[in-house]
View 1 (cartoon, rainbow, N blue to C red):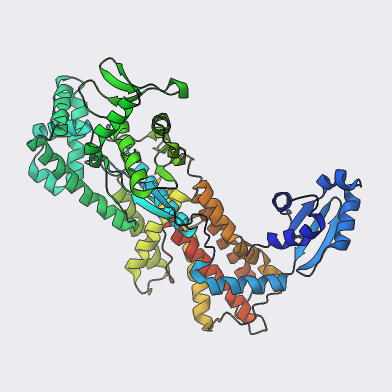
View 2 (view 1 turned 180 degrees about the vertical axis):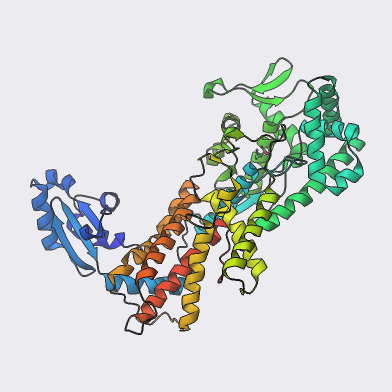
Length: 563
Ligand code: ARG
């Protein structure tokens, strides 16, 4: 339901000769204060056509407008102000929401087109970083949002399971590692070897040479190298799965970089056939100066392939496999140039679909103002963050609601929900400084606040214990409900905007605002008092709960019914 359409419908018969529907829609404004109505239409543009003063035009049009759907329509200076018919609005809206249930806000922008979403994509043998957490939760939310508007997302974890770092890791393991240590605590120990490698190679540059040789061996399929590599991959993935399980994120594919090993020769051949490859100091590059970009390094002088070569193979593979309508890469802003290069090379290769590739960047997480760095061992361990958040939630519950059933489950949903929501509530491109207390805060603009508001709505409904069926009368005349009702009606537009901007924060901000509006309403209104509008008020409470639950679900956050 979109009330703006009522305004368009009222204006169209009068203006059809002069303005088309899209232009009318674009001109409609939302007044700052509700005493000026719910919508306003400025008539300046019509002054030339009607050869009259705008004030006069507004007054004349108001005289002719069909006002059946409105409480009133008035001219205020050069504006026509529309006041929606609140009783009718509330009834229609609540009926729509209760009938549609979880489908309220569904749209069909995507016509079921497939959209691979490259997300999470951590590197084997290293801990999942905060950056990977961001990619995971942002990608997951975008996938949910795209599903809601009619696309078929394909969530791909493009694991960093190939590259020169595996040469370093093998050298590190062979020099300082043991099977027992890796088995006991895989990521911690593998990371240790990697960090030590970088400390040692400052004084022992020969280590670098050894590492390069091991990687070349790995690319050639050497047995020992392959065995170590696949073992590192397996134990790392097991650790990653623990975190994905905690976050409740599932993937459709774990085809990582190594998956493209046998698909790169074709790409290199295609580049050669199209005469795009150039030699530069023994390496093979694609010149991108026409795009104002650095050259794309396709093959090193020792024959080793590179990150971008694997990404080229992956892009082509995804196009062939999914016939995608869009192909997304949820990866940190610091890889902006890499994705520009990727698109540019594909464009040079003559693939028109390169225009459907979108890098969805996000901001950096720093700690104490400093960049995090795996190499220097400055990392935030995600598993610890999640566990701490759950512990904190558990303490909150023990203090506030000790008799709650399912306490442990709720603590998980609240603690982890807090971390996810914290990540999604700001524009994704914003940088932020990591601070555990901040992440697991439960008051203010947080996930637990939205969850708590929903649980409160649920408790009102439990207390009332009435059955809400779609054909009851849901007319609300109380002005105090107006902000909540109008916001409920915005939900479909909010989803469309979030999907077009690939911006989950649009939904997080919406949920926070709805929670605030609802709490304000609830503080001043006796919902359960027995008068003619009680059922309608309960329908509104149920609708708020439904829309909050859906908003949280789109973000990948659970909504416990009690907390
Ligand atoms: N593994 C990479 C990293 O941690 C991210 C991979 C992103 N995806 C891609 N197709 N390049 O930086």
